[in-house]
Image (cartoon, rainbow, N blue to C red; front, side, top):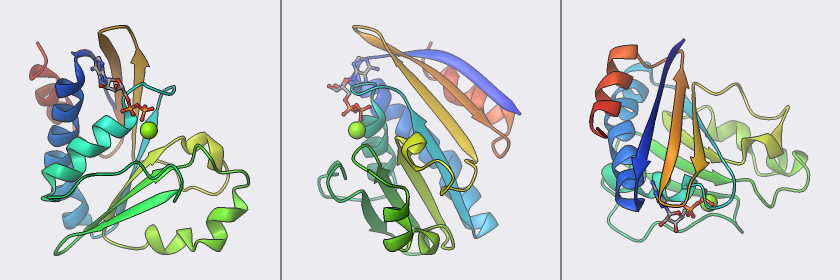
Length: 162
Ligand code: ADP
Ligand code: MG
């Protein structure tokens, strides 16, 4: 299991982390031709949506990235892959996801960014990457864990924040 911890200071660094993760995850997703699940853990205001915005914009999306708080999921289709941005905060019953056809999302060549994965326990496949963001006033502590990403790639990402 590859793992890294570091600190990011200010919103722009969270956006940058999203961009850097996209540059590692999208090639992996295209190579494996499967869905790569990224669980985004952390309280309200930890930076999960900010991270997702950086990730999605780095994929080439030109419009405003909206928080899928009410829609549960926002799809972004690119030429040969998709990004599905989930926010499960308002999910009342994991069964709702079955009605939405959530399995289809996990069968595509896609990256699934999942805010509040705990709300869907038992329904989501196991994450390939877990990102924990914890709140401080002017910064966030980040822990990234993955079986899919190589340690050297995580080391390179964190070296951008020193
Ligand atoms: P979440 O989706 O986890 O609820 P958001 O991304 O919507 O969080 O909001 C995070 C808030 O924290 C935003 O106001 C953003 O400007 C701020 N923020 C994001 N990253 C950092 C950071 N690394 N340091 C300080 N503030 C941050
Ligand atoms: Mg959010």
